[in-house]
Length: 46
Image 1 (cartoon, helix red, strand yellow):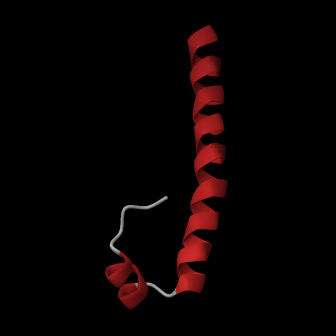
Image 2 (cartoon, helix red, strand yellow):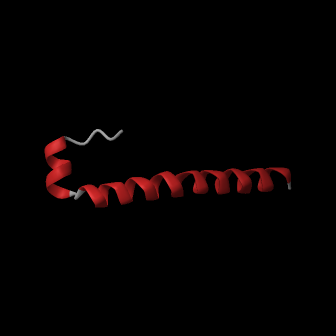
């Protein structure tokens, strides 16, 4: 999924923190994308 070297990932970021970041990204990114799309449609139609 990510292109981080395994050594850097395990040394700098704990697995649970990496999982939390991954979950937050997978949840927040679609929400921001949908919100941006809705705003774009709203401003485009007006």
